[in-house]
Length: 140
Length: 130
Image 1 (cartoon, rainbow over the protein chains, first blue to last red):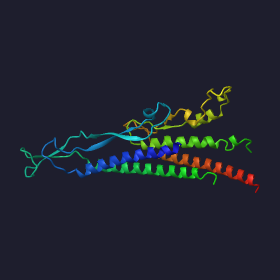
Image 2: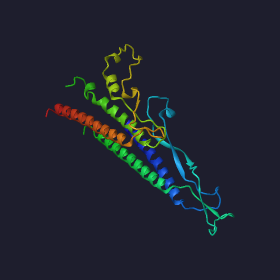
Image 3: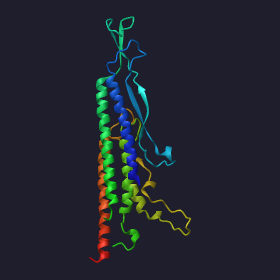
Image 4: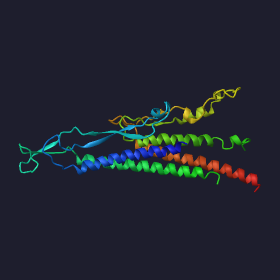
């Protein structure tokens, strides 16, 4: 029954979007984390989504994807912000502090997109549930 | 009036299968709305309909091990949706279009269910002689 598969698909979508929201939260929380070297500085993290294809499970070319998964998490390669602040306790010998390359505006937009996608998946799941319930009541 | 119990539900039996399969495809599109490079897929309704109606697909099975043509909607290959606007990451899912299609598909599913229910209740009342 294909309608049951929607629970898995929507579930995978919700799980992937949750990971994305988690990473956004982590990026936002660390937006002002200061460190004294480039190596220690927090870098903005983004999930990479990839479709789970049906032919990975069975060898059926004609079927659609069976959901989504987080293939990995990448760190942003954008340059870090460095400031000259010799009074700062974390300043290095040259008087510089390093701040993460988190773009708050990007993260906010990312968060809105993720929560919207999450909601879409929930709605889809609810509709599938209603259809299944009506199907079970057939002939009554 | 259908003469045999096999044709009791008419096209709605196949319609329900098709609608539930299509719901699954649309659900995967929606789940992959943010996947880079994912291409939105959908059934081509015309080819599904042709597949169901083509008399050429009828074969004589003279032996019980003969294979018949698979007339289920899944045997019709999936097509790719033509995107209305290109996106940089190669994703062709438009969440709003998928949402609308999903809603339409759910309505059609319910319509077929209603027809099936109507058939069952009319048969029941005929059997009871009400």
